[in-house]
Amino acid sequence: MHEGCSGSFDNGKQVVDKIRMMGFSAQYMPVPLNITCVDCGDDFEMEKFEGKCPKCDMVYGVTPCHAFDPDNVMAAGKDY
Ligand SMILES: [Zn+2]
Ligand SMILES: [Zn+2]
Image (tube, rainbow, N blue to C red; front, top):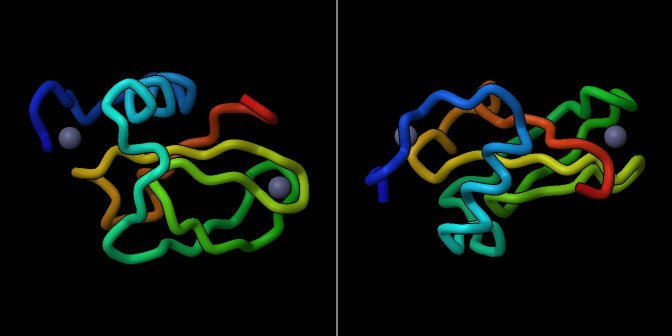
């Protein structure tokens, strides 16, 4: 699962591109993460490796090997 993952990304778009490419974006994380949206400040629960703020449609992504910590979730942009 960690293969090919450098663990460092410049931005959320790279994370989302990566998990989409690897087929993880629609898969559920072992433990849902509570995210505070960087754009609207709303709290929401992210259940899959790719998530979306229900209020403002900001898209978030995290790689499976780093999904243990909400700090690793990165915003990719609205409706990315
Ligand atoms: Zn990694
Ligand atoms: Zn939001």
